Amino acid sequence: QHEKGRALAAELGAGAVYMPLDVRAEADFERVLGEISQQHGRLDCLVNNAAIVGTLGPIADIPLEEYEYSQSIILRSVFLGMKHAARVMGPQGSGAIVNIASVAGLLAGYGPHLYNACKAAVVNLTKSVALELIEQGIRVNAVRPGLVETEIHASGGQPDRVRDLAHQVPMQRGGSADEIANAIVWMLSDEASYTTMALLDVTGGR
Image (cartoon, rainbow, N blue to C red; front, side, top):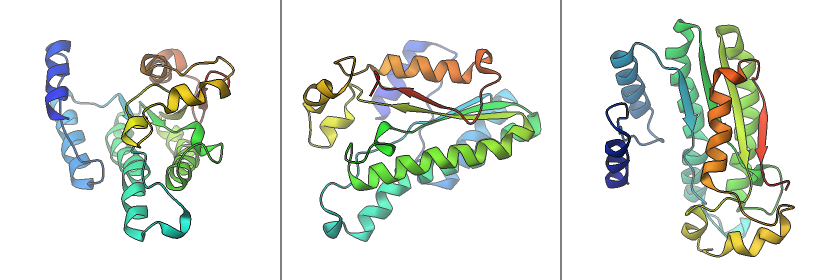
């Protein structure tokens, strides 16, 4: 979505830069985080937020290449982001990483098989890496959104999914992208300076 990215950066002003990368490609992470480090001398925050719905359908019908494609975006991207962020944040002795998991990694049947499995893996990878990087002054946490009104449902062929599932949420509605973003901002901020290896559920009580 290059046009949307460039337009948003222009709207935000001189402090924002749009830098596209393929989250499946290690070389792209090296390039982008290297450029940030070179231009600014440090990297304070990283949010790993790339995801797709992934393959739908019965387990018996999922081709291996579809499994590999789904995990490359949903899980491998988180691994690569943390790996290369740690290389920049480690020497500076500080930093904050937030990975976007999902309630689907906790509740079976809330998403397709591969999406569920990869989001569950994101949670444990977050905890494992947090234990390691705390010694370098780097905090690693995860936000676990619930039913959120974003385009990912429509991309999975379910444009009315939020409306149809809202009755399962104690608040009786889907969340907004801003409500998830507010949780992420807090976890990245100095106000969360004593918070690491945490999972913050933003689910409306689901």
